[in-house]
Image 1 (cartoon, rainbow, N blue to C red):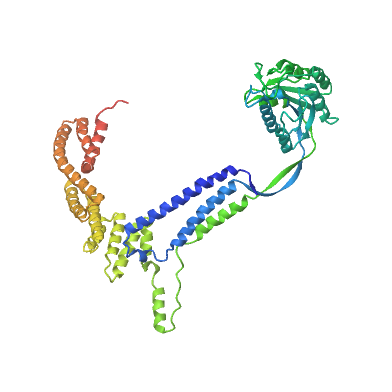
Image 2: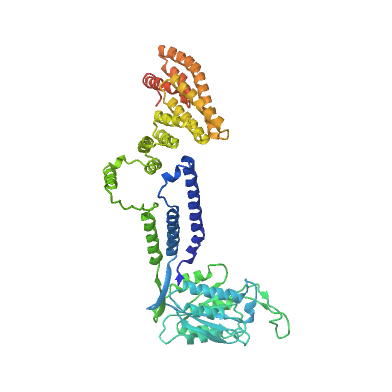
Amino acid sequence: MRFEHPNILWLLAVVVPALVAFFWWSWRERQRLVTQFIEARLLPALTVGVSATRQKLRMACVILAVALVIAALARPQVGFHWEETKLRGLDIVVAIDTSKSMLATDINPNRLARAKLAALELMQVAKSDRLGLVAFAGSAFLQCPLTADDTAFRQSVEALDVNIIPQGGTAIAEAINITSTAFKEGDSHRVLVLFSDGEDNDEGALAAAQAAAKDGLKIFTIGVGTTEGELLNPSLVRDEHGSVVKSHLNEKLLQDIAQATGGFYLPLRGAKTIDTLYEKGLAALPKAEQSAKLVKRWHERFHWPLAAAILLLLLEILWPERKKSKVQSPKSNGAATAVALLILSLPIAAAASPRSALKDYRSGKFPASLVEYERLIEKDKTGDLRLQFNAGAAAYGATNYDAAIRHYTAVLPARDVKLQQAAYFNIGNALFRQGQAAKDLDGMQEQWENAIKFYQYAATLDKTDRDAVYNLAFAKKCVEQIVALREAARRARAAADSATRQRRYHEALEIMQPLVQNNPTAKQFEDFVKKLKDIDDIATPHQP
């Protein structure tokens, strides 16, 4: 088994832990909100049938499905078959100089290592061409025949070193002659790419190139090294007098060899040398149909993890969080049967339950939740004040503040101090909302002053409740604004009325507008300001 895109599998190390962390956080947050909203004693009745194990298994299904989708994107492949394909391309022989002068380090890491890397780069570019390899120093031999097998060519190149040919020197002419024998009879497009520093010990290189050109061989030379040269390691190379040898790049010889066959010379510098060679030299040559090549075709198996992911997502959707309640067998006596028939005959809408009330509340259906809780209150014989509290919360969500205050007030005698404190706080909130909706400043001030009293009770019962302390200070500030507004409004209204009587509507508008901007207590003056603006738009000409 293998993956076509194994790098995608790294997403498993990022996405899966992130999903696990998110689900863990959301689980903790949901539990916190539920316990904050519902008293612990009432919680089992409201969550009857809900299975925590089922919820966790559903989360596990989602996480596993995401992991399988990532695996599918990586394209798993199992098994393969060989497929014969016809190729059109060139026959290219690569000749690499393996003399000891190629150990010079005037280019990094040394000349030979750089030439081998360039040959492998040519293999990547020449995808549809057959490649062969000739190694030469004092003599030459065919290291790899022409083949479409990239692995065989790569292994032959990697095996090259300066000891592969025991005879020292650089015999470029012999390398050209050996290359000519590598091509079969009838091959019309013959190419030699020669990597060397050009230090030839045999003067017949140019003559060999001219003879090869008559047989249709085109030579492209790649100069490896620098014209300034580099001293060779004295422990490896010395001249006949025992002196240290300095090796130079002989560009003139390499240029003459290439020109003699219709090719060209390139120095091996920078990252684009092989691209330039192929684009400007090899790609323009006519390609011939070559022998068939066996290509390994892997069998795609991405649909297996993808199908498993889809099944897991369907399971997560269809698998309920609640267990199916077990239906008890009816008793055989007539009284039990009569009771069962009476229950079945009741309208479905009349069957109130904490579970349905809580579900409506969570779904934002506050009026329906309020109706359910009020039915539960009517049926409750124990006087459970938590039902009253939940009904108040539903009424508040439905903006039925009168009902919210009524239900929260019923909770105030509770022995549970936390429940009592929450009721005081929520009554304050409901009174403040009623004050915001008041039609005049008097009604607004009265409701807000009442809200202040309940906020004070809540803050007294729980001094650590920051929300109660904040709302208390905010309500007091709003009442102070009303007092200040009355005086400001009296003065502004008098000035505006005076300006209006003199038909200076724009001046009256400029007096009143700052009064109502960003001031929640000036709501009752908004209609007056709007009328002034409408009159001002008609009476006062404006520049276009």
